[in-house]
Amino acid sequence: MDATLVARVRQYVDRQGLLSPGDTIVVGVSGGPDSLCLLHVLLALREAYGLSLHVAHLNHRLRGADADADAEFVAATASSWGLPITVESRDVAAIARERHLAIEEAARQVRYAFLSQQARAVGAQKVAVGHNADDQVETVLMHWLRGSGLAGLRGMLPLTRLDQLRLSGLEPDLSPHPVGPWLIRPLLDTPRTDIEAYCAAQGLQPRFDRSNLDTTFYRNRLRHELLPVLETFNPRFREVVLRSADIFSADYACLRRLLRREWRQLEISRSANSITLDLIRWRGLPVSLQRSVLREAIHRLHKSLRNINWVHIENALPVLQSGHTGMAVTLPGGLEARIQYDRFIVTRGGRSVERPDAPWLTGPIEVVLPGETRLPDSEWCLTAEVLARPAINENSVTHPRPWQAFLDYAVTGGALELRPRRRGDRFWPQGLGDRPTTLSNFMTSARIPRDWRDQIPLLASPAGILWLPGWRISEPARLTDSTQWVLVLEFVRPGEG
Image (tube, rainbow, N blue to C red; front, side):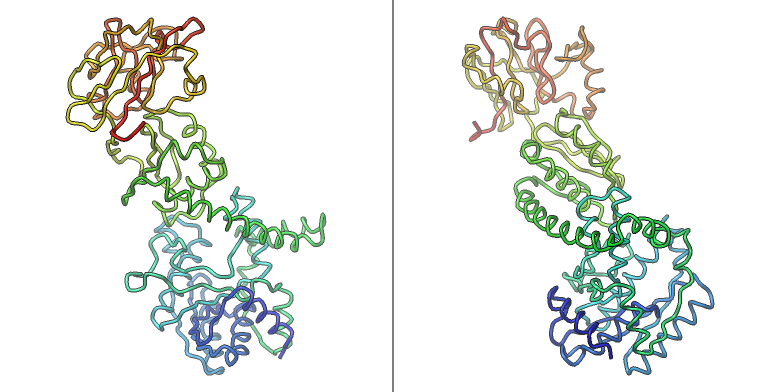
C-alpha cells in the first residue's frame, strides 16, 4: 500500500476536520480512478477512525453498455472488498430536457440528490466524493471565466452541507433532518497524477469514461485545451490557482461573517416570495457588502439558482444606490428589486408589491406651520419648521432622508395642505425637464404601483404641488443661492427624531 499518499490524505482530513470517530460514510463511486482511489484510501483509514462505509453508484444512462459495465464493476468491487452497496439509475438526459439544464449540470444535481437520499437511508453522517486538486483548478478557472465573485473563485469546499447544494427541486425530503449530512472531499488536495500512480501501485484497474475526452463538454475543453496553453505561460499554473482558491476562501469566510452581522440589522421582513431590507442602512455599507447582501437575498428566494452573473449585480447597484421610490431592476431567477421609500424589496417578478408602512392619506388636511400635523388614523405625523439658510446642513439638503424635504419658504408660503391627488394635477419634478408634466405621467414613469397612487400625501399650496413625498420635490421650490429661509419638512412616527 502507498503509505505516503494515505498519510497525506489523513493529514488533509484531520486539518479540514472531515472525519470523526465512528462516522458512517456513503462513498460515491463511479468506477473511475478518483472514486476507486478514494474508496481504497478510506478502507485503509477505516480502522483508525472506526468508519462504516457504504458504496453508492448511480448509472446516468448516458453511455449505454459502458455505463452498465461501470455499474457491474463497482458492484463487483464492493462485494470483493466486503462493503455494502446501492446501485440505482436515472435518466439524466430526460431530466435535463424537463428542467432545461445542461447535461453536465443535470448529472451533477441528480448525482448529489441520489447520494443525499442514500445517506439518509443508511443513517450516514457524511457523503464522500472523489474530487481532486486538478478538478479544483478546473472549477476555479470555470467560475472565473463565467464572471464569478469570491464564492465561486474559492472553488469546491472540502466540507459542506449537502442540504445547501442547489438541486433545482431534486432534493430529498429534508423534514426529518433539519441539518443534512455533510459532503466531504478527502482527495481535494491530491493531484490527479498521484491518484493514477496510486491506482497502478495498488493494482487497481479503474474504468475509463470516454466522455471525459469529449471537448463539447465545457469542463473537458478547459482540461484538454485551455489549461495546457496556460501552463506554457506558467508551468506551475495549477499551484497558483490552488493557492489563490485558499486565499479567496479565507476572504469569503471573513465577508460572510460581516454579512451575517449586517443582515440582522438590514432585514425588515421576509416571506416565501419577498425579502424587505433597510435601504438607508444598505446604502451606508461598503460596496463589497452591498453586493453580498444582494446575492444573499437572491439565494434565499431562489435556492436552486447556482450562478449569479456579475452583470446582474452591477446593473442593480446604481439603481439601489441612488434611485427613488418606485424604481426597480431585474435580477436573475425571475426576481426584481424595487425601491419603496426607505427600504427596498427583493421579490419574485410579476407579483404584486405589498404596500409598505408609509404615511398614507385619504383626505385633505391643513399643515400646521410650524409644528406637527398628525395624519388621521395613522401613527405618522408631518413636522414642519422654518430655518434660516445658514442653519441648514448642506449635506442634508443634498442627501435628504426618504421622508424629508428642504423647500424655499419664499416659494411655498405658509398656506399649505396635505392631500391626495386630483384629476388634472400637474407636477414639475426637480431635475426632470424644463416644464411641468401631468402627475399621472410622472407616477407612471416612476413605476409607482397604481393601488398606491390615490393615497400618497401630496404637499400643495395654492400655486400647485410642492412635494411628492418619497419621490421628488418640485423644481420651483428647490433651494437656490438666493434662498434665505428654508421650510424643513419630515414625516415621522412617535419616538423618531
